[in-house]
Length: 263
Length: 316
Image (cartoon, rainbow over all chains, first blue to last red; front, side):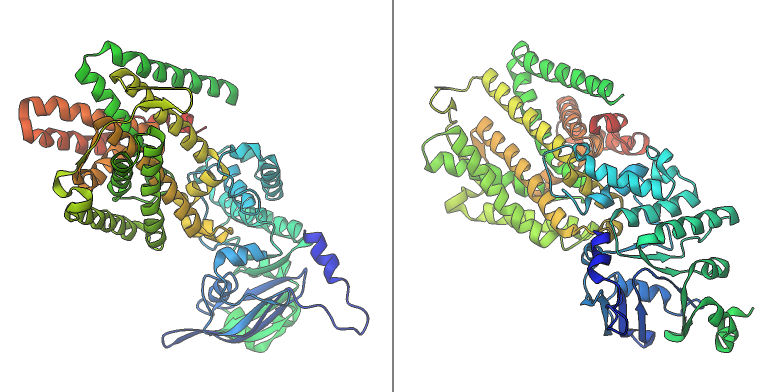
């Protein structure tokens, strides 16, 4: 399905119109009462890119994620996925459209096994309304689930209870759950939060590995992770886009230095 | 590995069903009736486990489903030729009608709001049934004749105590097998994901409300089946069965027996009824004092319920 998508879009002909970006927000604005969390944020994410969103606490990064995944309805502005408007769709619909996310605070099914966590995610695309056959009879779903577990390196833990995994492994299970829904766009909210340096390196490698046929939007505070992964960076500050560019450009930007990168 | 586990399960299943089939004719009539009745209350408790134990929605309105199953069956037996299957289908239709209604409103609400809404709905039905005397017999309820046990075009015979017991046992066992399979199905696994983490289940692409609606309807249907069996057993229905006290007892059966096991609530119903029987012999209407104390002790020292320790095996 993912392959079809990219084939369908095709490579832009020289000088021709480039295909619609996978994700585009247009003048996205979110107000909570008197507080403006996002103000006219326009971001465009080409297919296959890894984009980092950085900014100080309260800059609106999580609000942006919540809008894209449908948890929040923007006050104004539009969100387009591959040219199709998805503004205001609820989370289960944005998921079906191909947007998956991992959470800043680990958000898994603690009482289920590791395999069940990803299996239920894979199942949301296949056979989810079957009532009278055993779920294990649907081996296609289990195969997809195992693929996702393999991608995040948790295959040998598949029978453990998710609650018993180490913090780092739970963080990677988060990504596995997201992958199992066969997304086009993967939104990672601080995937390395709370991880040791060794675990962080592993997760960075993992994200790089899975990025081959995915578009990734990543919010991260760890500058090493951001600089190592992102092709482009968008800097948010008080809900507005302060700067956008390659990691080198962002590091050299005086305004960004002033509000964020110094300390 | 799962093969041997399966074998253990089916062996245990066969032993329990055989014991329940053989025991009653050996018991005195009072206790035979008692076992039959416990199976019916067990089915009611089992149906609510789909919501409480598997989906994580506490329903305080199961008396409404039970009651509509009862009154549906009563209507068929009073107005139509006495046919067992017709009477039971009427019960199921009655319960399903309420279930659709409750599901639509109640699944828009979560946690305590859902519990309260189910409670309110069941009390509305109670008041309607209690006051609409011309149709429902009001406070006095309705009495009617028991339909004969029949298999269409094959045979027809009057229920004896034994055949009634076996018939109820067959319906309850079959319901258990169907409900168990549902909890193991992809759909059932979605319900359990909702119980574990509702927002996450939504985020991976499930329209949670729809799954909850179907869960409420399924649960209501089997509760209605219990009501229908009760009406056929007792040839009598009364508004008391629609009162919220019954719904509360159903929740207690679940907690005592072990939520999320389907058979736990049946054991809970049996345990509760045995205690009531034992204590009310000495204490008459004060039997609830020791029952309440035991219940409190169980919640503290046995929070998983009587059969909670078997949860993983029973659900494999």
